[in-house]
Length: 427
Image 1 (spheres, rainbow, N blue to C red):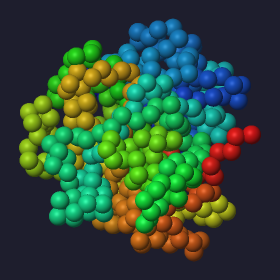
Image 2 (cartoon, rainbow, N blue to C red):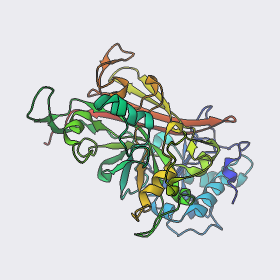
Image 3 (cartoon, one colour):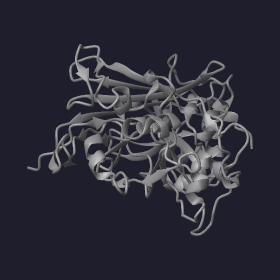
Image 4 (tube, rainbow, N blue to C red):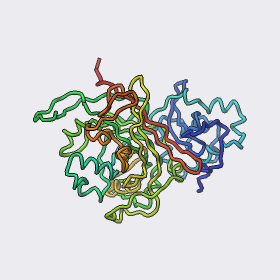
């Protein structure tokens, strides 16, 4: 089935600002709350939010097999469960409805008033009910930097890293949408030079520049997904900031890995950008040496050219861009990650989220965490307001943005933005 929504010549009768992340060729999916406190599944073109529940009730999806309440829910899980054919049919139909040449909704003022909202008048919600969350560790540059910092620089990568997409299972209960503030966590740390740990607020809060992909129902328990089929089970992508408390992490990580240092908060962008929308931005990933085992081998273009940037904005000051990177640097692709995840028969469900791991590039300005950018705090970053940062201060807002661009079309993710607050005090 062709992806007609990606037609680069298509224009919308809705106004789309120049360099908007959300032209008619994007058509992301999300969930928002209206002024009337109605939660609905929606999409976006330009600065307009589109109520897909209202569109369905008004029969604009006539001819597409959908359950009656498909878009009148507070998550996208059921829609994602319907599979790739339905995603494509719906996205193509939305593109047709909002095409400048289609008068059906354009010239119906009554329907437009029900369907279209200004983005400033809606409140974005978490787009899916995330049952399980896995975070990978798939940037070779990032893994190498961490290895150099904490182990022998000559053997920075652990022996398994070039053979498997390393990962750990995170905590879905503290995944939040952009705009929700995060409290500095309390935890155990081991001060430098001491032999006894202390308990208190983390002093080394970091961001991790990541993306994440959302899956549909992929398999039954015990079933592996072949590498040449896994992309059919990836719905789309979001931007992700996997907040990290580096001092807590350093103390707790031996022997089992991340726990409280990362599960206190993970922020994601609210619009899921479909893999169909990202199709024109495929690119080859880095050469993999040694060659992976057959169950992880793939040919062709399985990475995506997504420009990424991170900014820090102190309270009452302008933001400073501290890093620029690109998703194409990832050593292990999303399809390899999902194939590996199910290789032992692990079940993957609709709404599960898989984090990429910190995305670092080959140059110091493309590193995806403060841990790397300041090299463990040894080289503080100077912000535009004249202050310096080794890690994130209370009151700072971390802003991650991402977009793809070619042939005059820009497909963006918007942003994931979260402010760090002091530790939570129970009243």
